[in-house]
Image (cartoon, rainbow, N blue to C red; front, top):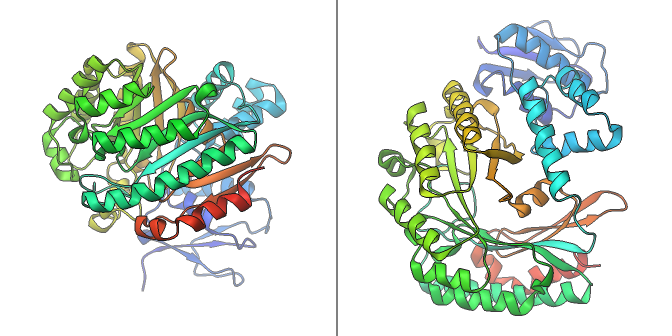
Length: 456
């Protein structure tokens, strides 16, 4: 006989979003969700016996019942979506009453006061400094799906290939960039932000970067661009020559992503660089003179204690990062970590909670404030990722992509463009294929998809 806790949800068949909430209390291996086939006496927990159709009402009952049963009370209450700041902002725009929204978040949505205050303050900063995107503006994302090695937690398009394959990919990418630039101009639209991500864009050689940036500058109207970002990412791909190329083309924001400053951790997660490589990369970036240097750190990496995380954070601040993103480790289905330890994100929840509290304290003491936030599935402790900025070093592309009130033209393998329709507050996704070889083979189709759905 199974010793799993049996849960029966009555009168509601769209269960995945409800199951996400249950997973914040119980490991999937510790419970069984019974089918909706009438009253089952073998169920230990019956939910929604009144058969309400109100999803949030059902989620509140799940939250309250499982909190009582397990003694666990997740900080994010019944919210399971990626964009809690967007939700809070929409509530605030409708009511205009901050206190009423705060009460709704803490009472009806069961958030802690700390999380409710956090998302409201993040939204208010975004709204005050940047407001809504201009209707004619877009964000432009250009993806480079290559890295020196693949990290154990990675679920992105990240390939380890030779230079010949990279050149084949770049030929296709140049074609899509030229096409997108031309169609943006013809549609009367302009880029507000340009963001090179990946993968690791600085996997490319300095010559490849220069040619790619030349094509980008020739193809798009940069007169309205407020932010030009390149994820340098892996310190072992950064050279003085590459940084000079970026700087010469007007890149004003780069990311150097240590994830940790502890060598044992870097080895464990599959990184091929050392803490000394990180220090060297920051020194090169400082000499080159970028306005914003972002650093990513991950709370909850395998083998790390609270003090290891604190030490990494203090080191990147001393190295000169003026923008820091604190990620909570997420055990994604497409990552190797999922195969190694599928319940890892449950076991490190308390450690991660302490690490996130440390980050708020350390960064706050140095004048950093949170400016954007998002959540993911299967995060350790089911917490959040938070971007912190010193002064006005906010990442505008990050803000817009999470706010979802702007068209995004995403180019390259794995890019997902989004056409925004302001009259109905609706987004339509226009995806590229993820496999870079398929992208090369089907580049004409990728452009045709955009032709049919992305432009005005």
